[in-house]
Length: 496
Image 1 (tube, rainbow, N blue to C red):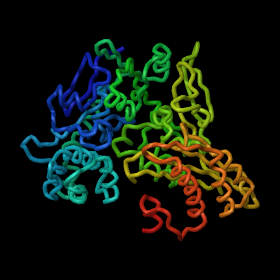
Image 2 (cartoon, rainbow, N blue to C red):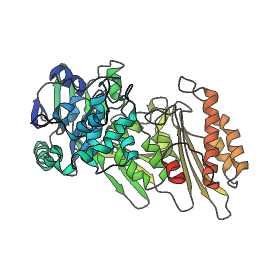
Image 3 (cartoon, one colour):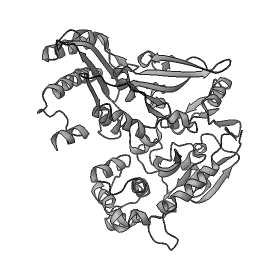
Image 4 (cartoon, rainbow, N blue to C red):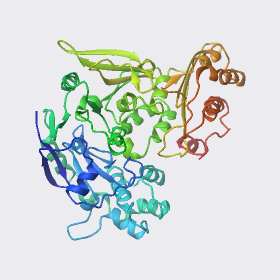
């Protein structure tokens, strides 16, 4: 095992022998390095004031990602490059094109949120040439501004490539050199980092991961830390030990197996969105609304499932698609694997069917057969960067006579776990896809759910919305001329 953390801070190599396993990148920058350009706003990955850019190797290529420094643990940066707003100024004191665009477009007023906006725009610039306004808005959805207003900042996003071409950008010029340096840091050793009496582990293989989980059954497994980070910053938990899955590259793989996709547990939401969008544009829109881009860059499909949240957005869609979960653990001579329907993984609130030593290895997602209908809807108080009040996902299959022969209706936010609506499904089977069938399904929903009642939505509201989402499904699949969405990718495509 290697007992030192190694990463690049800008162009400088940092090596740390002892580190609190849950020290956040934000606190390390501000308190240890006195790099105070990165701000703390919410400490929960919501406001974007703490945004930094992380460069990591992805299949040999350097990939830049905007992430929330407030909930990212420092040891998870092993083998990466960390860029902050302090790294943007040129050696001659000149502003980076993103900064200059913010000045010229009057994109800053009080300035507190400005470094986060600048870093989000930097990540966009490094990854994409000439992004359109919609893409700029998407990249900035995880950054909140209280005083300037967003239009000048969006204008800066359009202006940044006019000020200087991407080819002249210092970070793009140095991309290959940085990739080579990160490749030199890459090794097959498990990182074992001590911090006081606590320890952080980061294996590089599934086998090593299984050994660690078996040896430390009380450990907290960390994927993107988009939720676990809040356990530390909000609940003040002292987690020990931590096992980080981010260095196990095989868990990031997404493969097309013909009739289904095999998605590794550590596949990030950005890549999962691309893969699932090929199955249905409904999935593309659903994943477009997973937090801000910083959260989508860090979060993973396995974390979204294993977290067990009743309002996780992805499980209802995957349950409706009849996905299978692959669980793994150390066996006597080799890995033991167990496959179960995803819907049976969730037992009750925060309790899953995971045996001692098991962890989520992959998700198998069937493709939609010809003639199937699929729909996904998320209802929340804000369109962007908000958690669900209700999330519904539905799949229907039809017989030769046009009647429904299979119905899978899955909801999040309606109970303590993501759950199918069995009575509503039964009301649909054998019916034609029309108003009468929908009325029967809606009438059956109270048999399936006694909805949650909390600050996000009342039980009455949730039950009403659950039925309305079924009605939206019918309208969108039978009345193409009727508009059902006031915002979102589908509305833009359908109504220009």
